[in-house]
Image 1 (cartoon, chains in turn blue, green):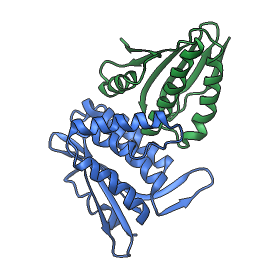
Image 2 (cartoon, each protein chain N blue to C red):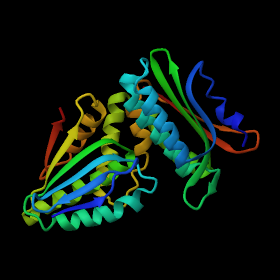
Image 3 (cartoon, chains in turn green, yellow):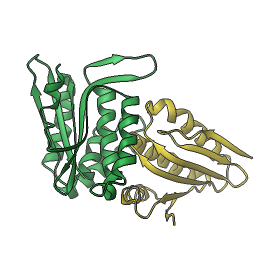
Image 4 (cartoon, rainbow over the protein chains, first blue to last red):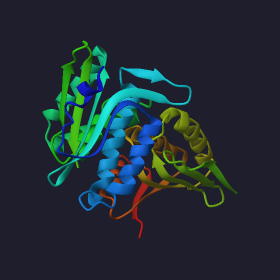
Length: 178
Length: 125
């Protein structure tokens, strides 16, 4: 998959961080350090950097752990994907995109559909129900807890989409705002 | 005796057990590269030592934890709720920076699942 296909939803006018390619834990560490060092003191972002940081980590770990295009490394994992953190008016937009499998599309689609038809209060209630589910069932992987967490923290409804790329792969993209 | 169960790293918290004070401190961040690889041995060890104590206190001071770590904390709460039946009353102090609404709200969420565990929200000044 071309990186240009990943980044076509990331054409913000005021990007602060953009990365596209194989994302490893070391890449995550580097950008996370930037968020902390820069966004925590930048006037436009200092009051919301914790929220930016947590949405960024959830999105990036999803790419590292679940991207359908990956390289197995001896001491790390690498998932193909793209990330962008951009100023968007008075808010900060955090976006991610990565290839997914057909099976992942069904699972992610179910939780994202639930999120988009729910109000902010309903998302909080669903998030709590998923937390309870993971408490009742120790083997639960808390399906969707990460996406619910992103939706709960986002100050605007999350945007998401799936699309078929020119090479016949499926792409998932998501944006949230802090 | 004070034992350090885990060293702090950029993505994982420091875990300290003070047997004489019956206190466990979990401090730092939790978004491990390998969630179960880090937490599973710690969960087993903490649940084992906590059963030897009469009034264990667990202090969480997490400046950030990811959704995977939320499941770990919920599993702790489930186990510690059960201990009340054996006469072990676990107290949790959830420490947060007053400027960090996120961590405070997470603490409020956890407290709502506690019936037997004495869950306290503590602002750090």
